[in-house]
Length: 172
Image 1 (tube, rainbow, N blue to C red):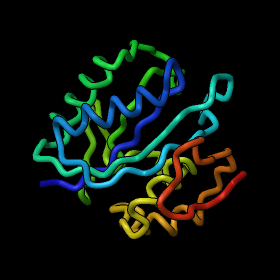
Image 2: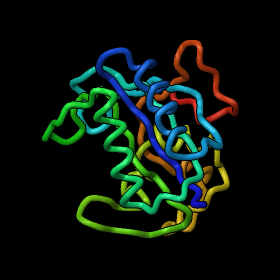
Image 3: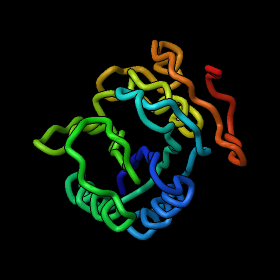
């Protein structure tokens, strides 16, 4: 079984329902180990849109990286994600593979670890909540250190009604 971390995000429609639906669908293809709280986050890379609701989950799966990606894309499709061709566009649901064990992998459709983890405060905040000691296989630093070194100044705050399990870097 592989240890995998997934990032979930949505900023169109009922975002809370989208994230809960994504977690339920993921549980049908993998074993859910941990979930961060839900966080409201400033849009990254394209600020002219609604804020996102995000979470990170840790799962165990027997699926190899590309079949896992295919299963995730099917979940996104079933939850109403519409194809968009601009980067960082608004979306009904987005699920990204952040880490897959300590694998370093690159294909035309997938890069593991996710290439922007160290640059995104929102991702590091949620990862730090559930796996502060996880070691980035390329950067050779754990999540807590990457969070401390992150220069992203965007706002990341716990969503109303969703408390995080651990204190994370507070940017508000």
